[in-house]
Amino acid sequence: MKTILVTCAIIHFDEKILAVQRSATMKLPLKWEFAGGKIEAGETEEACVKREVLEELNIHIAVKKRLSPVSHAYPDFKIQLIPYTADYVSGELKLREHADYKLAHKEELLSLDWAEADVPIVKELLEL
Ligand SMILES: Nc1nc2c([nH]c(=O)n2[C@@H]2O[C@H](COP(=O)(O)OP(=O)(O)OP(=O)(O)O)[C@@H](O)[C@H]2O)c(=O)[nH]1
Image (cartoon, rainbow, N blue to C red; front, side, top):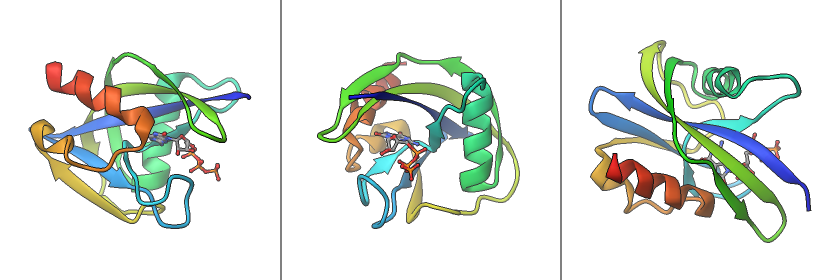
């Protein structure tokens, strides 16, 4: 099975963090995730995460720190998920693909129903 490379952004709005909920029609319907998406050919991870966040949420971010990548096998595909912390910079948040969003303190994040690949990332975040 091919592994897809996906970046995602843990975006801080002051002391809160943005989580987004996948829509009912996406893969992993209604699961919570960090905004992001697949790396395109020739694209750096940082460029990918900034592009995906702008496409999905209409906001500009400053990318900060790379956290530990997570390899996860879903029943029908494998993913390597590469998380970056980031700060919100500008733009009005608009959901272009997702069903919902939440701005939460990091301790509140664990109670969401995350995509499985994201669970180790949320745990690492709690230890930072
Ligand atoms: N963006 C993002 N995707 C994640 C996370 N966790 C996780 O398992 N994924 C999976 O990684 C893949 C990211 O691909 P994507 O968002 O670019 O595309 P997609 O599968 O929604 O749409 P597509 O298959 O029509 O291109 C999705 O299958 C998604 O389920 C996460 O935190 N952020």
